[in-house]
Amino acid sequence: MEKIDNLDRQILEIISQNARIPFKDVAAECGVSRAAIHQRVQRLIDLGVIVGSGYHVNPKSLGYRTCTYVGIKLEKGSMYKNVVAQLEKIPEVVECHFTTGPYTMLTKVYACDNEHLMELLNSKMQEIPGVTATETLISLEQSIKKEIPIKIQKNLADD
Image 1 (spheres, rainbow, N blue to C red):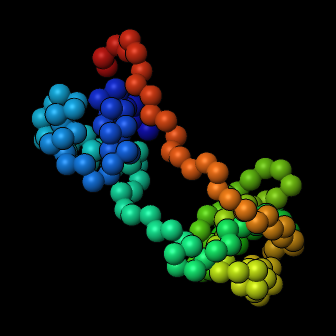
Image 2 (image 1 turned 45 degrees about the vertical axis):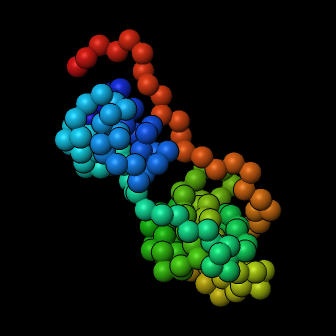
Image 3 (image 1 turned 90 degrees about the horizontal axis):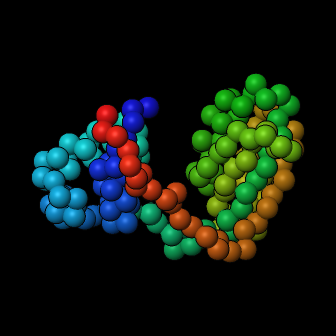
């Protein structure tokens, strides 16, 4: 990945706090032109540094009151990609990670209630070929939700 400089970091810090901020305001805060901001942001998108700018919908507002993490054990780790392809077909599965530790995979799943969760587990997730076991952890409350901090590096020589 291409190196990002302090101006990139400053731009990221500003737009990560308010994705709708006009580029002219970002430019004024950074002391550069609006065109420079536009070019930098586009470059950061192209590099995969910026990966989205949409709205986030609260799952509870759509009736998904149960947030769970489901650890999945696979018959063989090499089955991971096939299992992921099947999990992608389940709309309630919103994240999937290939992990170390007791599970081969860890997924984040939203359900409307415990009955819906049981249906997802028994009729969908546990029926995927290669899945040998699941363990479900229900989140009672999300206490922390934040992005990784963007730090301006001091005393960097210009490249």
